[in-house]
Length: 137
Image (cartoon, rainbow, N blue to C red; front, side):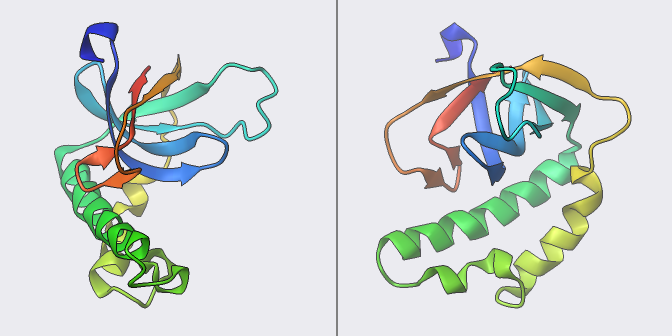
């Protein structure tokens, strides 16, 4: 995949008929990405992208690990959807991380716009180290 220009997607913040927001490597550096075109009017997947700080990447990784471990428990049948930490009030650290990350996730005034492409890989959908797809943005 690397030879074809695809890079790792580490965090998915929103999915609607494809990734709408998250954290991925773009040009070798971590970036947030966001696409608000939920009806696919233009056909191309254009994303707004902006650099993610080291602090944001670290916090996002910790938050993603909480969610990925929850998904492993859900897949094993040990918990149900009502226990998802993103519902709030379930996991104190998850709640704290969401508050800390809010300012990093806001789309800044100046962003780059890139057209993206995904490639899926085999294995679990959600993994502590990232997702089952890579991007080329």
